[in-house]
Length: 582
Ligand code: ADP
Ligand code: TPW
Ligand code: MG
Image 1 (cartoon, rainbow, N blue to C red):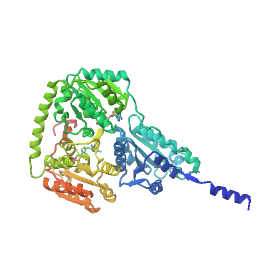
Image 2 (image 1 turned 60 degrees about the vertical axis):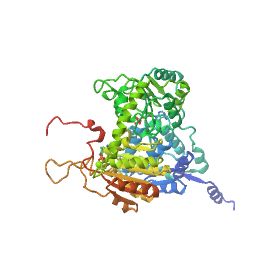
Image 3 (image 1 turned 90 degrees about the vertical axis):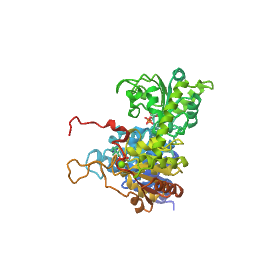
Image 4 (image 1 turned 180 degrees about the horizontal axis):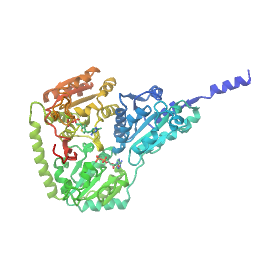
């Protein structure tokens, strides 16, 4: 022994190596990321296998957009970036809509896509699934990175995590070329290159003078109002937000995904008097809500302005982590830039215990409107028309959610969305997940799977029949992982309803109309789940109760009067009108 050859052999045996596959997995794992939502194929199939072998939860979907939506909502619910894994070009593009939607909604997410050979892509020589993915992703998300060397994986993952969760959260694209996965480095060198991100979303403390300015404005208000947005839900400052609302006695309005931050049945909720409080308020405190289209840009008739662009005269205090959000639509008199936990904490400290409640005439007027509207709603909900309408069906959902306040409610559609939002009360934070800032259809099954995977609670998805179609194939995924998801299809035979006619009298149905009397419940049965066709509130109730009790994948086809909806639900006015008659 002792020859040079033997020496070399011994060295290479003792010299342990690792590779790109394992370094990506290790880098995710040391940062507490334990779940991947994705769809396998070249070049990430083996990566997905190895991730599972290393103890990560790898949830495979039928379409990348749904995997992306699952990742995005996991990010919203946990404050950790949700991971979506796709193949190159087409898989990447399928995931990109979800990444951009996550960015628009300020949800932290990382889309990791494999990509083809750089040298061929850059010379456009026609590689398998060739695409310059990094360039395409860049304008559509918060940040985009590519890793070319295995030694840089640690840095790449660290940068992606920080970009996703710090400041205003958003979507990050991470490009991993096929060649990277097989690259080897010495195990110890690889290990040393990994970064455990310290304090990934640092607190951002508001300036004391900004806090004082906000307090002064709030103190002088005669008709104050608090608006809670999904940023407030995301921030997980639930106790402090509740304390701020209750100690000031100021009425509040929750935006859709902020419902449940305080229970919707709270005395101070002004949700049932929305069209009274928006134009009536003189000082509005926005907490994690943007003055975008969902709030009529803070001006116009909704806010008591004379015409559709006129300012209503309100003064705004805005809490947001993004300084650039201030003055985006109307003047913000008291910008409070920082993280919501720190800002609300600072306001609470300034408020102390001797804060005067808002004037009684303001609170009284709200109470009057509220009780009138709630009584009217109760009357409508008590009706039992044949066939069911949105109200009689959602009255059941309302009871089921009340009895199961921990259940997560996913919601999309037009009428199916708007009626659910106003009828179904929420009782706990981050339990209502919906179409968000874009009003995007297709989040349904992705959000349902994401919520069921990262949480322990059952999921109820209230879906328009059109909305469901965008992600409906994931019922197989729900059955495959045996997730406690109860889907209720509000089946009114089409987009907004099923009554449109083809004006030509030709054989094609109108563009908004679907197959009449479709049985979506059979889709669930095809994969071993429970399917129920419900034509009455009693049948719907029985089926939902059983679904929650059994935790079995369930799809209920709720037969809804096809004339019950309106065009675009509550936002009919956004439809452009033709000046030409016929
Ligand atoms: P909604 O649609 O419910 O009105 P938006 O999505 O318009 O809510 O607004 C959410 C806002 O919350 C964004 O402007 C975002 O910058 C902000 N935000 C998100 N997380 C935080 C946080 N932790 N602290 C402060 N602001 C936050
Ligand atoms: C990605 C446009 C908004 S709402 C909707 C569509 C197609 C479906 C409404 O019908 P549904 O609900 O779901 O049956 P209902 O109760 O009113 O009958 N493509 C995308 N996003 C949007 N928002 C659309 C299209 C749209
Ligand atoms: Mg419909």
